[in-house]
Image (cartoon, rainbow, N blue to C red; front, side, top):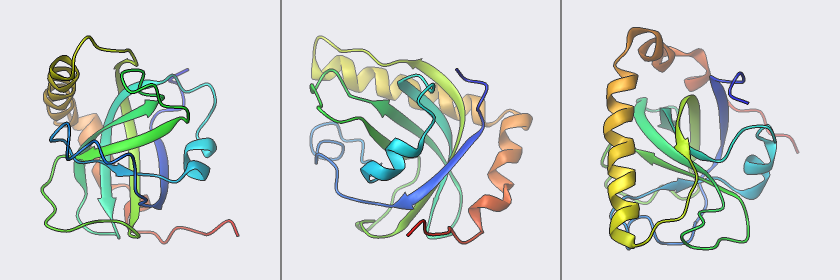
Length: 153
């Protein structure tokens, strides 16, 4: 159910599977399992777009995958965020905040690594266009991106 959008989430960036940068050329910032489990169960798996920032810094366009990544046969659900910005450092341990604005496509497997990369590149181009629309662009200014996240410990 997509009526929950926009959806805000945040947490520490942790190591993922090591595929984003190395295999795909599309680096991702990954949430720990507790953040993944905090998302509504009714949220469909697939590719989404929205806004993201790291440690209350500038807000950037992003695409993200929510699901099991069937091409890789993952055993655990993950949330992998690709920000449309080049960072010159590792982001592990820093705080990632995301605003999921819209849904791009359902999760599916691919015949080849090349077709997976092509689909993600298509997602990126769609996200850029959607996020330039006024109603979606205004979410970049959401107070969430400058507020301190509360710990649930």
